[in-house]
Figure (cartoon, rainbow, N blue to C red):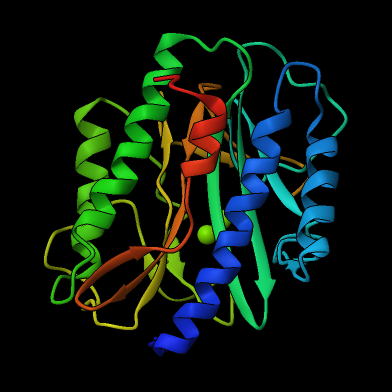
Length: 264
Ligand code: MG
Ligand code: MG
């Protein structure tokens, strides 16, 4: 069932997503070689709770195992999504995708950003650049009257044009009172296919893109997803609301990008 949102509900979704973006900005200030993802998780959880919200990832149920134990997903290098924060220090040249979710006043925020740790190889910076661009290409076509497949195709075409892999097993989603609502938003598809985009539709669009093959596997912790070829993966996610005929981006990378400067 697709739940279309009222303007009042979109206001609440905007607040929840702005808190995610502020959390990301807090993390951007401290991400550097030597910092652990467990430290980032602690900062994020405190920041979210200090702002009257709940980190939605913590305790999130898993059909394959135990609930998610942390407030952020931190996926390093060849980890694609759902990495569990740990005590391993980040190293110069790593990348780390921080996926973060909040529940504030009954509505959810969900956004992901892939950060550079120190000096990252040009080949990997290019992957980050193209993945982020593909997210905005998807958002550009999220117009009333278009379909989910138009978003999917825009993401896929941009990434594959650069020779990258598009992960198939994980997709974007509707968002509202629940973090994951209908419809699914794949990062691959055909234009003109899938559910029609209408005013009030709120979506998390989240390309998960690999430097090499898009084939992935689940680690024994039953959460962490890695590329099978060991090459890096990037993940950028915005929550958007379609209203007044077009997409408004409810989350924001602006503060992060100010802090990290022009990297690519
Ligand atoms: Mg997310
Ligand atoms: Mg999501």
